[in-house]
Image (cartoon, rainbow, N blue to C red):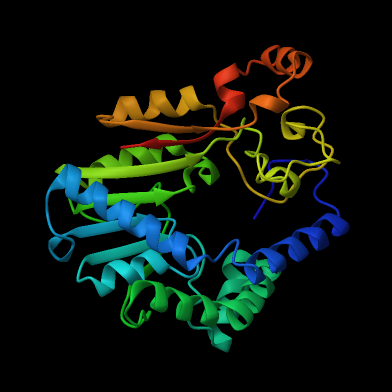
Amino acid sequence: MKTVMSEKGVSISSKVKSAFYLYNAYKNKGFADAKRTIYHHRRLIGYLSKYVGINVNKANILEIGCGQLPNQVALFHKEGANIIGIDIDVPTYKITFPIFLKIIKTNGFERAIKSLVRHFMFDNRFIKDLSREYGQTITFDNIDSRIMDATNMVFESESFDFIYSNVVFQHIDNVEAAVRDVNRVLKSAGIAAIHIHLFPSLSGGICLDWLHPEQSPSTKVPPWDHLRDNKYPVNVHLNKMTINQYREIFSNYTNIIEEQTVTEGERFLTKEVEKELTDKGYTREDLLTRTILFI
């Protein structure tokens, strides 16, 4: 996958650092936390109940960006929902040699190695933790997980009661096409919950040193480096959209019932940094809003 963060690419040392960070994050359950996964699942069920008013086991549900280990798909499947997960990555809840070759072909050798390491070192532990937190055994048998582009979904119009996506849309180039297709495949009485990590935020550049600024601020990388000199680029594809650009697209193609935002980084936004970045066209809201959720 290409990077939009630096035309010069990312150094080997940065990639090694990133790999080490990911290893520690999975080891310490930062990226595979069963309790947080169950909490998020309950919140999704709450949206379905509040806005659509049907039981999970009678719902047609779509997850956009389910990931290589589609845990929410497995949870909804366990509860009897007709659930489909889509992603551009090859699912890895089972890895065989042909699947490994498919990952290389689809997502590249570097991603394939990361997937292999994560699968054999961490996935089984996470699934056991997830089953314990849920109170029943969670398996990935017979789930429906497909490789598909969110901007060109093959589903019939008005197919789903509920569509959700968690911090995926910031990686999509043609957000307008994706939102338009979400509206097309969503039933007229259905609901979508699209959660987006905003690029101009302090953590929005996905720099490892600033992923959790309130808990562990960087002492090395300047705040908002990805909007300034970009001396510490990361190998992540981001569309660089602002909050109002998202609002305009979602307003054009959907009926926004509710909008929720999470802020961060105000104590790091000095007058000098704010002026530098507002001169580049970013608003104070852009710089301080970490995520937005459109219902």
